[in-house]
Image (cartoon, rainbow, N blue to C red):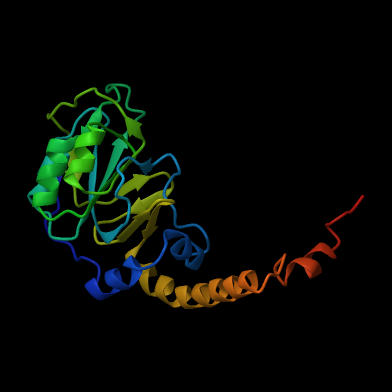
Length: 224
């Protein structure tokens, strides 16, 4: 088990700014490519969150590393767990249930995100943390390791480091690497202006966006 205790969290004011925005807008501001895999879906009714990633890597049938992460968690952290579903030595198990989620909430964690499985949906709703996962299974995990906390992980094509920003809502999860945070914030101004203009067109009764007519006249479009 490797535990990296010391890493910088994202600036709290930037986290607050992003927390008021939809994940769709955030992804638009990052070349429409910020989302984690669509297989990671909301399990709980509560889905909206923004915070600094606290990364965990583990086998698909072991959650010792998740418990270890509680010892270094700070208020507002998002527990982001990369399970290895292709590890032939393990079977898919629940990495988190309502008990672990309850401990996580007491430790200040604001949400739990994993490409693995969880369980106790009713209990998770009662805890109140947003929980996103690849699915549900009643199978219980072991607590033997190996694993890591605080080190970079990979989920899908994304490399996620502790201190990156993770945002979620009903549409899914987006990841903002720390070097891209200012780019995202700058890009969101243009996204907001575009969305506002489109909303105005809708309210005015327009049946199509302004750009569509010209686009349909281009050479790659053929009408029959």
